[in-house]
Length: 245
Image (cartoon, rainbow, N blue to C red):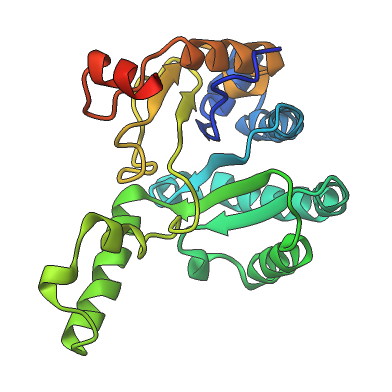
């Protein structure tokens, strides 16, 4: 277990490698996605145990619609199944469930289950579990820009009022802290259109482990790595030292 000092408040994860995990075992990609759900369950519990405030997972990107239709359909059915199986347990463990992304493109039944799950857990005070579904960082910035443009056109907002803080308030994560730590599995060293605005000062951790094999040990390794880093946010090391005194 890591020290409670300097724990990341918000951990974001790009859950990558389900398909390759299955392929190396001679299995269908669906088996990898199913194993990935089990890994997600483990890490939700692990983050709650470590008193991390927010866990975000990149479940389905806006680009994932380009995958074979059979795989997309399976993923959607898996989302629905996992949601129905896990929502009571999440609620009993005081976890608040939150979905972000363009949910309007999802199946109506899935949309309804998402609304029910969010409503059931909305008053929970433990870990906030954010599931990015049909989400893309570019989409998030675009929809925020569109909201601001509407306000400017209606003269509810002046152009000089559009500050960094103003823009942030129009993102889908406006009420969440930016991620302190981003973890990506499977050996790829990129963020793949996840939280483009929010990751400006996030510490990045990449591991070769495929998502289905990700566990508490690797999570703790990522947290320990994070705790060793000096986060300066544009200041110098000397200035950070001054502020710590």
